[in-house]
Image 1 (cartoon, rainbow, N blue to C red):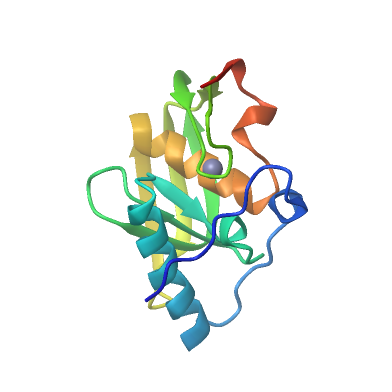
Image 2: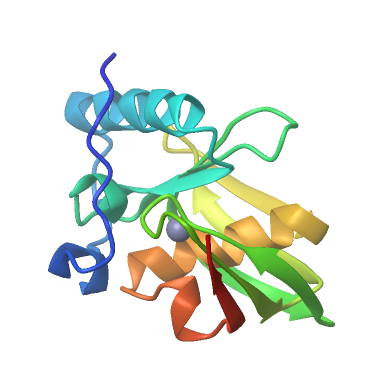
Length: 150
Ligand code: ZN
């Protein structure tokens, strides 16, 4: 396992759309291991592959309930709304309030290629939306209000 360098706002790779994964190769498994380690090292609650320079649809999330690995994640249902402060490892020093669904249901593949469904509320709903946005080149600062610079 190895730490990967986190790309920062201004790096154009963060604005590109990531590609679907058609086969979970050894390289994808190594990428996931490295992303988990990088997220943990940075004390993040989530990390998407484009943040480490890889335009593939992979995200890892850990809101304190253990790591979740999602390959080709897709939001299939949302309910309600919530407004919470957000930050991003790629946008250090900035925070802002973002309106997100209160509940989201996501379909994805796990690291074994098995179809899984993840339901999230509160912080997990936010993390799911935030990380999946990264796969389409969107950053929280695009939709945040009252952005504060530390
Ligand atoms: Zn982020």
